[in-house]
Length: 90
Image (cartoon, rainbow, N blue to C red):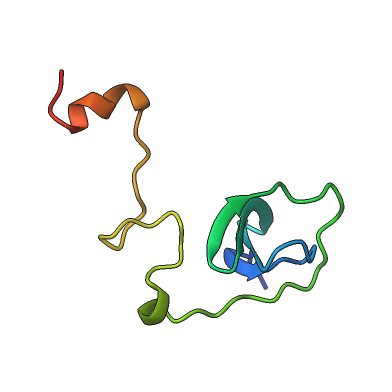
């Protein structure tokens, strides 16, 4: 049996924020309070083993994964040096 890794929004197990984003089972610095995203690194203590996922209707709030684009796929990273070419500048 394979253990599932937490991915997505969960209640902040450290009780510092409303929600905290988890990636591959690891708490990240991305947090959300009252619908506003910000950054706050997780405390340097072990994460509690019980996580409470946040169930959000995508129709009510849009795609809640901060890494998805509007086309339903993972957004591509881009090199900052390529930024001018995106707008037709050379």
